[in-house]
Image 1 (tube, one colour):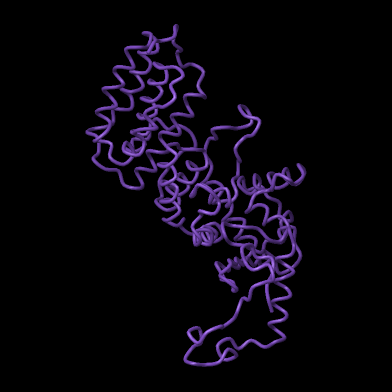
Image 2 (image 1 turned 60 degrees about the horizontal axis):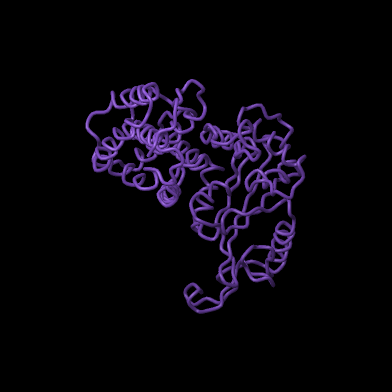
Length: 378
């Protein structure tokens, strides 16, 4: 029987098991011998799956994947988990948004009550399907207990935690405190259609099972950073989680002036040089980030000498108090750096992005930064 409700598949439905050419038959066997499933079990699983894909609160999307979630017995998790993974749509009521946010916050802090999602020993099941012409492909299939699911979600949320660029104190539309898996995947492509097809399943495996994040995930994030020439909150959160989980590195949520990693220090230095440029040339449309971020984060030795010479020119346009402050910042960062590295590997490029993000955020957080007494002229 045909399965309906999978986004991207034929509206009339697609089959989960089918053989439409000799090339797909094993050793010349006919269809029934390739997939020996009786008509009654086939009718049962297709009916159940069609019911799940037809329920708004049981399905969610991860990239090109339509996923369904259920538990061995009725639990609150059946209706809440899909929204926790995909994010609550804007059209949903504020009460639902608040409830999802509260549950994610409790999971991240380890304060979730034993009955809020269901009995810890209850088994869960999650199936991810993606369209493939008139057939369906199984992208992922995971099972386990709610106890394991909550523990792995807590690990994931904790490792993503980082200071937000826009929060409730400085924006009417704050960035998500606990981003959904779909919001994370959106950081890998210019639009939703550009998300790599296999990445959704790989990311879900990492989240649900607590395994390493896929390397292709981080490579795609770095590609977007270079294309957009900016390190946003969600991209910084992803890089932090990857460094912690995959490489056992210690990364703080906010600026860490004791971090001596060369990539992190160079990212901070790049942010200071950019801020000096902006102080010297108020209202400038294009900064050094637009021209030099990609090369500075990958081949710093080829770039930073030139940037420091330009920096001296910018310092000359500042008043003495601000000039002294910027020079002190620069010297503090350079004090633990020797020669500029010729190349930075992916880990150090991630550190560079985090150092840049942390330092930029710190500029707009601290209140004791000296301000220029007069506007400089170009």
